Structures are given as C-alpha cells and as structure tokens.
Amino acid sequence: MALPPVLVILLFVGVPVLLAVGFSFGMTGGLNRTAAMIGQDVFTADGLITGEAYAMLFADPRFPRDLAATVLVTVVTTLLVLGMAIGIAVLLRLRAGWASTMLSGLGVIPLFIPVVIASWAILNFYSGDGFVRSLFAQFGAEAPIFGFTVTGVIIASVWVNLPFALLMAASGMQGVPDALIDAARDAGAGTATIVARVLVPMAAIPLIIAGTFTAIGVLGQFTVPYFTGPNAPQQLGVDISKYFQSFNQPQQAAAVAVIVFVVASGVAAMYVWANFRSAKQEGRV
Amino acid sequence: MTIPSTAASAATPVSTDPGGSTVPGLRLSGISKVLGGRTIVDDLNLDIAPGEMVSLLGPSGCGKTTTLRLIAGFLLPDQGRVEVDGAEITSLGPERRPSAMVFQNYALWPHMTITKNVAFPLKVARVPRAQIKERVAEVLELVGLSHHADSRPAHISGGEQQRAALARALVQRPKLLLLDEPLSNLDAKLRVRVREEIRDIQQRMGITTVLVTHDQEEALSISDRVAVMSEGKIEQVSTPAELYRAPATEFVAGFIGSSNKVRALDLGEGEPGVEWVVRPEDVRVDPEGMPGVVTRVLPHGHYSEVAIEVRGTDLRAFVTGEAPAPGDEVGVRITRALRYRNGTLDEAPVTVSA
Image (cartoon, rainbow over all chains, first blue to last red; front, side):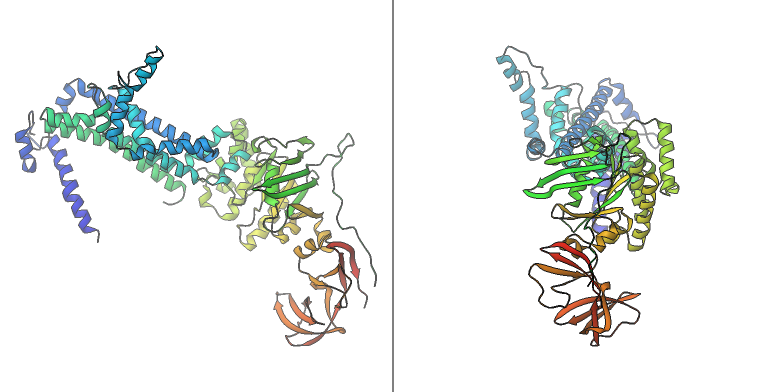
C-alpha cells in the first residue's frame, strides 16, 4: 500500500511547504499565525496574496547581490564539477592506468569526510594565515587569500560535490560499449571528437543527474558558505538562516526559500526535459 | 583405382600495376601478436587482390578477429607488416587507416539518427556539408535505407541496422572493407538475404574486403577465397570450391563440411600415419558394396543423413530419394576420398572405381 507513506509525506512535507509559500505571500492566518505574531516586518495580504515581503527583500541592495553570488557559485561549481568528473571519467574509460585510477580514488575521498570538517579545513588551508600563504611565505612569495571569499566557497563546493558527480560520470562512461568507441576511431575520430560526440552524449543521463544534484545542492547549501564564505555577498542558504534567526523576519526567510525553490525548479525542469528527450531517442516513449 | 591429384591450395591472385609489379589490395607479411602471454596470431601471411573478398574462417579463439583488428589498426602487431595498396600502414591507428569496419553488433551510435551515423566519418574528415548530404543520400539509397534516414537505430530492425552500419563504412569510400561477423546477430533467413546484398554491393563497388566469420556456409557462399585459420595460423587459402574439394590439412577437411575419417578405404587397419577423409556424399548405398547396418537416419528435407556401421566403423552417407530405415542391412561403397599423411593432404581426390 502506497497510501500511508504518501500521507506522511503530505502531512510532514507538503503541508509545511504550502504553509511557508502562503506565508511568504502574506497568508498570515491559521497555522502561520504564531510565526506572524512573533516575527518582525510581517506583511498580511489585504486580498488573497501580497508580494510585499519580496519587495522588501529586493529593496535591500544586499539581497540581489546575494542572489547573483549564489547563482554564480552554483553555475561555476556545477561546470567545474562536471568538467573534472568528465575529465577523470574519460581518462578512466580511454586511458585506464595508474594515473586515472589514482585520480578517481582521490576524487571520491571527500565522500568520507564530513562537510563541516572539510569546510573548516579548506578555510584554514586558504585563509590569510593558512597553509598555502605560509608555504609561499617560506619562499618569499605571496599567495592569494581564498578564505572568506566567493572563490573559497566555489573551491569548497567543488570538493564537496565532486565525488557524486565523478561516480555518476564514471559509471555512465564505463557503460559505453567498446565497439561504439572503436567505431568512432575507425571513422577517423580523434580523442576529443570521441569524447564530445560519443562518450559525453552517451553518458548524458548520468551527467545530467550529476549536474542537477550538484546545482540544487550548491544552490541551497549552508555549511560550506557559512564557514568559507564572505559576510557579503552571502549565499542564500546562509541568508535564510540570517533572516530567520538574526533578523527575526520569518516571512522574508520564507520568501528567500521560495526564490531558491523557483531557481531549483528551473534546474529540475531541465533534468526532466533531458530525461524525456533521451527516452524519446531510445524509443522508450 | 584412379588417382587424379590436384594442388592443395589456389595461388594468390594479385593485380599487376601499370609498372608491371604486383600490388595486392592488402598484404599481411609475417604478422604476429601475443596477448596475455598467448600467441594469438602466429607469423601470418596473406595477400588479397584489389577488389577481392576473402573470408577469415575458423573456430572460436583461432585468431581471426584479432587478425581483423590488426588490419583495422585497433591492435598493432608485435612483428610483421600490414600494407594496403602497396602503402605500409603497420604503425597507424584506425583513424588514419584507409579501411572501414562493420562491427558484429553494428556499433551504431544510439543518440544519432541513421543519417547522422552515416555522415559521422565525413564530418570528422571535414567534408563540405553539401557533399556530405549528397554522399549520405547516395549510400543510403545503395543499401536501401533512404526511408529510415531520420530514424534512430533503436527504431529499425536488426537487418536494417546492419545495412546502416555497412552504409557508414561505405560512405568513407574505403580502400579496404572489414566485416567482423556482421551477420551473426540476424536470423537464418535474413542472414542469407543480407549476405547476398553485401556481396552484391561489394562486387559493384569493387572494394577489397575481409570478412571474419565462424559460419562456413557464409564464408563459402560469398567469398572469392577463404582463409581457414587454426591456432593463429592460416591452414589454407583457397577458393570455396577448392577448399571443399581438396582441403590441404586434416583440420580443414574436418572443419569444412561433414566428413568421415577412416584408416583405409576397405575400413581395415591401413598404413601407419595415413588417414582417409571421405565426404558423406561420396559414401554410396549400393547392394554390391561392403555389407553394413543402418544405425540412424537424420532427415534433412531433400536428402537424409544416414549412419551406417560397416566393418566396425561408423560411416555417414547422404542419401537422396528414399532412405533406408534403421536396422536395414545395406551395401556401402566409397566412391571418392582424400588421403592424408601426417595430417597433410597426400593425394586428392582419390576416385575409387567400382
């Protein structure tokens, strides 16, 4: 019977989500009443809904910067993660040897290290008084500071998200039969063409899954930017916590969450579209 | 007994260029390959004339596919040379060889349409777009797949996929066409039709072709010559008719067609080191012959395969018309045989007079 789990999900996930979305649009009655009473700057809709909480967010010049920085970190991290995962997976598929085995082994190590520890370690590694700067100083050189910067957030995000993407990419490419690669070589294709025209398109679904999960994960992440990121611009995941706890603005926090959800929905829509397209190509639908 | 002996294998036909020297379409000279400590191809020599179709035939593990991969460039030989139309290509990778291969499982890229699959080699070679369109349309017409130009491989039948793979090879206008068991995934009826189509196209285009197969019927029916391989070596290269009529070794005699092995034509002890191979069609049921008893009858439609025990030896005979029943006492006469001394053909064929 599927009904009990569906009911549990509806009750403990669906209802709170709907309440939060409604709250962000000024529905302050019912189960939202307590939060509306405690919170500051809560707007109540005269009619059905109001966008005043959103207007307030965007009126503060910091918020659009935070949003832009979050999207930037998400896009750059996703591209870097996919690039590295594809690179190592291609190496494993086409030039299996000690180097590719070592890289793929190193690539999944972050899976076994808790994000909070990794974030702290990365901050210390790249901070103003961190390992890299100290090492460079030994030779009279000055290394850049990545601690508390957007670059630092991207580096840490790549570290955290690489293992899953690498596992997906490697399994996708290992699944491409040798004959399809041989056929491309026989047709005159070099390595770059084989990667671009055969391996990547044939591993499209696992790569899209890896890309989607990475993008959505980075979009809403908290720990990594909380430890390694700057005070401004901040990632939206940290913003939600800040609006909710520090500013006591639960309605604005809910509005930020809705914005994150909308952006994530765009990524999810791409995933569904890509899956459908691939199914159509293979004659499954 | 009359003994008209013939040569065991046909001479290799090669073309003569205007300069007077002979230039084979493909020449393999002393090719050897060791894989995993095992010699897979052992000092193999083969000349194929331009436009000729030669099959590499042999049991599983005889090295025929490895030989084809050495010709295609997927493997490089440990020793020996590969030449195509007189040009040495031994150390070139497959992308730089003037050959095109049709793979056993067709190896069509599932994410591309048939047109894109076929156009791929030309795109890689940076052929102008208009020319690609023209050549792809031409080759799809040739293999009869124009109506599936925009279909994906998953949406067409096995036979059509096979023809699409052939089109992808032909569109490159290769000097050498390599076919790696291209028909093994097709059903029996389709196999016969497609192999005739392949032969027809190959002859029309005059492409030097190497076909790898373990199916002797396939090899014998569409090849100009057949190279029978065993343990990395070529046992015999001959025309299909010659191969059947006068197999050079006992291995070839046993591998090609059905055969009876006997020590002597009178089924007695015979001579040491000598063995006789008798084709079932050369075992006649004749009341005047040696007395025997039918042990089994296997009907094959227009003929029957009859097992007869004669003087303690089991003989197989092909009988057309009405076959005797198991348990019948019949007379048996051997009309033709091949004589082998120490595994190689000594005299062939030996016609036995009544």
